[in-house]
Length: 67
Image 1 (cartoon, rainbow, N blue to C red):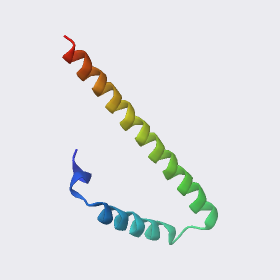
Image 2: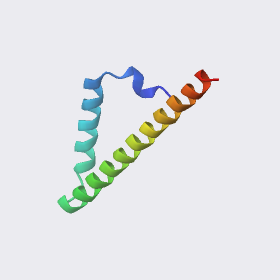
Image 3: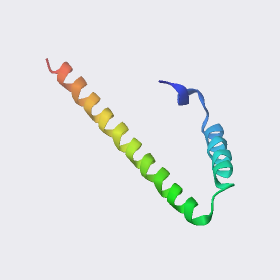
Image 4: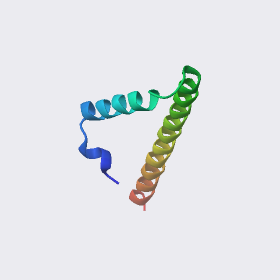
């Protein structure tokens, strides 16, 4: 999936900002805090998954080169 490979960083920032404004419109501060923490946790989890996949891919490439 290369969906985000064609979006420049500035466009991604604008998308995130507009999305945040739309989501925040109908939520009270307590709900916003919970939702913000949820998104942070999801983001951390996605980063961890990506890092582990890269590590395993590099290990696999090293194993293939050593054969």
